[in-house]
Amino acid sequence: MRKFFMILENLTTVILILYTGEAYGQLVPFEDFRCGSGSLSTSISYTSSYFCDQIQLNQCCMYHDLCYAACTLPQMECDNQFCECLSTIISNPFCMSIVYPSHCNFVRLFGNLFICPMMG
Image (cartoon, rainbow, N blue to C red; front, side, top):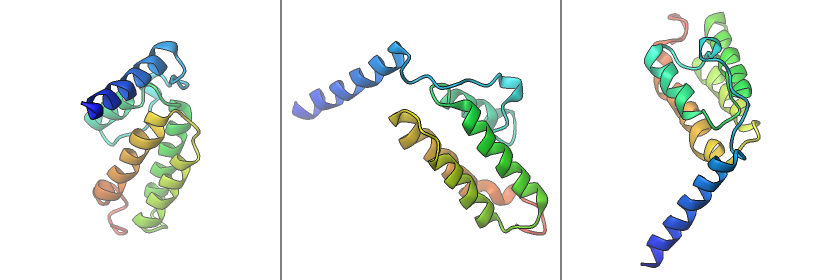
């Protein structure tokens, strides 16, 4: 029962933060959002980061795309730079503990499908 109340308290805190607008970051218009490799992953990224600072997230994604397209650094280096960029974004606990790490993990797992073919 104690666990239930702890979960309920945490959920209430998250709802309160979201409701009061404390958790809102700066939003990017969807058509200018550059995170994701296609319409599905872009939509998921955009939706999951709604309460985050999308401007800074979008900048990290654009730099990451440029790193992949340049074909000069290995995937691991591009991904490490991306994850480092994400870690510098000051945001709410939801974004810092769930959204940004999931973006980082996604590129590390699936980035080889999108990096310059000779670098993969």
